[in-house]
Structure formats: C-alpha cells, structure tokens
Image: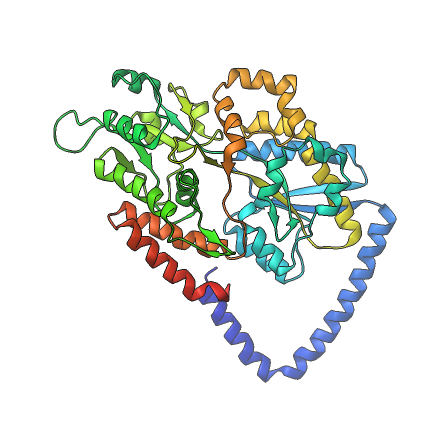
Length: 439
C-alpha cells in the first residue's frame, strides 16, 4: 500500500469526520465500552489458564535459518508450559511495521532485529534496558564479553546478542594458484597487487573475463557494512560526540582504497544493492569477495578458502551481531520474555543455532563444546572468523544511524562511480548536518 494512497484515505476520512462528528462520537463511545469489556475478558482468560502467550517478531533469513530458530522456540515452549512464545516472521518493510506497532502501543513482546536500530528504539521509549537483569544473571559470565560493548548506549545495555560473526575475504585457491600467488595478502598494498594479478583479459578487449575482487555497488547498508573494516583498519570513525564525522582522514583513506581498486581495473561492481550475492564468485568471474560465514559459498561445490581482512594501520574487521530486544509491555509479560532471552544466551540454544546457521556462538561454553568443535573441524574457515572476533569493531547504534548510513552509502556509491572521496564525503556530511538535529 503506497503512502499516496494512505494520504488520500486520511483526507477522505477527515472530510467525513467533519460531516458526521456526532455519529462517530457515539460509535467511538460504544467501541470504548466494548474494548473495556473485551479487555476484562482477556485478563480473566490469561489469569485462569495461567499461561502467558508472548509474540516474538523476527525477520530471520534464509528460510533454513528460520526453521532452525522456530525449532528452538518450540523446545522452549515444551520446557516452559506456562510461557508460550509465538515466532512471527515479519516481511519487508520491517522497520515501518515495528515503528507503527510501537506508536500504536501494540508492540511485540520480543523483537529480533539489527543492533543499529538501538538508538531509535531507545529514544522512542520502546525497549527496556537490561543492565540490572544481566548483572543478576549467572549466565552472563558465559557470554563473550566484548559483545555487550557493541550493545551499550548511554551507559545502558539495550539488547542481548542472538548471534555474531564478522567479515573476511573469501577467495578461490585454484585461481590464486593459476596466477602464481602463493601467499594471501596481509596488507592493503598486498591486496591491491594480488587483485591486479588475478584480473585477466584473455582476448584483449579491455573487458576482463576474470576480476580480482567484487565490490558492492549501492547506497544501502550492505555497502556500508562491507566498507567498514577498511575504515576501522585506518583507525577512522564516522561518529564523534554522537554526531556524524565523515570528513576525517581515516574515512577518506578507506574510500580512496576502494577507488584505487576500481582505477586499477582489478575490481568489478556488483549489480545495484546486491553486493551480498555470490554468483560471480561461484562462476569464477571474481577471485575474491568480502562476506561472512553465513555465505552460500560454504555450501557450494566450488573451491574456496578465507583470509582475514588485510590491514592498513591495524588489522580489523566489523562484527555482524543480531540482537533481541525486550519491548516495553507489562511487568508480567516482560518477566516471561526475560526467561526466553536467558534461553537464547544458553549453551544449548547457541550450539544448535550456530551449527544450523553458520553464525558464531555468543556463548563461550557453546564454542568449546564437543558438538561445535566437531562442526568447526568440518568447516575450518570458521577459525579465521573466530580469531578476528577480538579485533572486530562495530557500526554505531546511535539514534539517527539509518540517516547516517544512507548518506554514507551515497558517498561510497558516488566514489565507486568516479567521484573523489573528499567531495563525496563532504556532500554527505553537509547533507547530514542539515537534517541531524531533526532526527
């Protein structure tokens, strides 16, 4: 349904409202009486059956991962007959649905979503801080400590980690071997040289059949996410004192490096907003791709391996952490929802979830478990991502991050299409300064 259609309906409703004010008033009074009556009935039913039914909204993809999650939800329901959680998949557009539910005072009890929305939800008063509960939770000591730092804003922890991972560079060993490359690159300069060697124009038409690397074209979050390890490797940042800070040397250097790959002719661009797709890698059209352990590449039949993100000033990656929020509802429902959050952090949940999806466990006992160690022995590339966890930074979770990401994404796209990093970042910074205080 389009916003234009909604606006026309609102206008029509406003016109009718003026014409039939007294009739509508009577209807509203009757509806209020009915709602009070139904509310009383609902409370009676809940009190009588002593079962608290919780709604959990999630947007877990692909469907195979969703199946793993729903199976684990069913296990929880079997163990806790007095608490029944319903896992509800919300399709696109997700954020408008969530915000509409919050503003309409009909939020879910638990929300599985992206950590980058934390600031917006906290500003709306939609979520509960979890500091006090976590401090009293013995299970907290089992959770990888630095994950909580990513979830901390204004001295409060606002969510728990459902899963984590980070970005590395997948590569085709056979293509490396054919190009005479015996070692994987560890620095930006080495990555640039390797990308050149892997770019092959067999018929001399200046249109290579094979490129060294794939870079994501687009303004949306995937492009920003993929670029972030390069920013962090320079020691740069995009936020200072909770405000956008795009015009810093680190950001310029990181964007210039991507521009250099394009200038060398050793990188090709993905289709717009589809930089996460692996078709070019699987077909051999590109030899290297930035992605994480959730990738289809690990389930394909092609030869592949992974090396850590190369370093500029320091070695760095960026975390991909999915979170769960405790939404503001009622004390009884929130208490029941915290039981489910505790279950999500447990060794049992994390082991089965991580083996089933490819994400890394957030529970250290799960990581050390025999079952997960056996899984890792069959997927040795996971060791690269595990080793990067301690040096993985994160994207901001401040309110207004979506606007910041959009402007930064536009700067990344403009640079890949030929603009200078300085000019692209300056335009993005000026755009943000005009709108930031209205976030």
